[in-house]
Amino acid sequence: MKKRNPYKFYSLLLISCLGLVIILFNCNGKTKPPPPPPPAVYWNNNTPKVNGDSAYAFVKKQVDFGPRVPNSEPHVKCGDYFLEQFKAYGWEVKAQSFKAMRFDDVELDSRNIIASYKAPKATRTILLAAHWDARYVADKDSVDTKKPIDGANDGASGVAVLMELARTISQAKVKPNINIDIVLFDSEDQGYPNFIKEQTKQDTWCLGSQHWAKNNDTNYWYGILLDMVGAKGAKFYKEGYSIRTAGEVVKDLWQVASKIGTNGYFVALDAPEIVDDHVYVNKSKSVPMVDIIEFDPNDPATYFAKYHHTHKDNMDIIDKETLKAVGQTVLQYVYNTFGSQEQADAFQKAAQEKAKPAK
Ligand SMILES: [Zn+2]
Picture 1: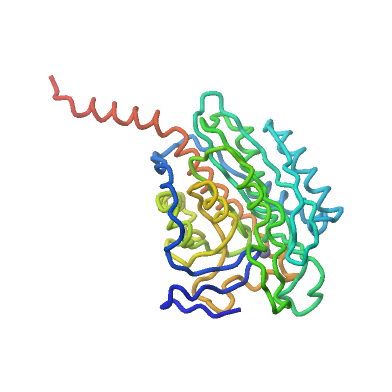
Picture 2: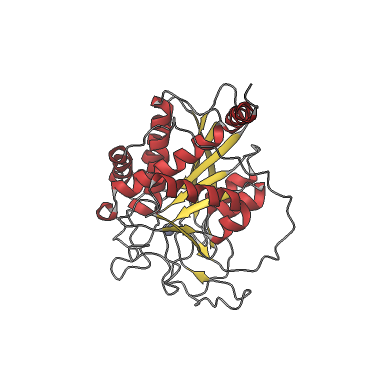
């Protein structure tokens, strides 16, 4: 792992994460078409409440299958469970099966799980995503480094929050007037382990989102990615790539957190860039996508929390309050944006009425 040097832009990186490589880099990438205009945000008082106990149960359910490592039985069973569960909430489901090639040429039987909520009159679609596979090694642990991890936080927590959003929406009196695709990316966390010193291949992480981005035709208004969103005391900083490619969404999301009181988790400070699934989605589809992810920009030595890619990433570190805070913040943001045009019209009308001179 290279130590980052904040004063030298092109000195890439700092490897670590969860299927992700942290990179600090210069902005001189390829020219891309500009992203679509960001959503106009209005406050929506009809946002239903997410349930922390329910989200917690969704984490546990996944962990109880065993580590969801591709080519294993728990992985197949858990994938099937997702399909059933989203279907039970009335969402359209499909599995995008593919073979992912691991860095060492092992073929991974993989499935991206796609669940869609269709609103009757909606013209726009948003993307909510997380990765669902668990890391096949505990390469940052000191014991049993070759054994897979539970991935209670790194994997299961993001999925659990999205399942809770689907459940909440399915039972809500006021449904979102927007189409929602929840995509659970597979094979995100199967990249080079730390103990392999010669790492010659590129893009060995985020295999599911790489495949999905190449095979998806939907245009998304904006996207939100959840990664490691369930640990006790987690802090979510404004991740750099999200700021650069989805700055307005970042600003509004963190403002929502401030307004609903989840800003103990959502810290309004800018942080360096991380390569996670949102980068591949954005590069391929120009979807402005925000990554809500736990890491500590003040600790350049490790970046990620101590449980990261170790056997400590189990149910003991999961906190229902964190899950609830993330779920409620995201859902409030989604509800704020889906009705924006109608609400904008109503606001404008009210303002005009107010501005009329009294007779
Ligand atoms: Zn990971």
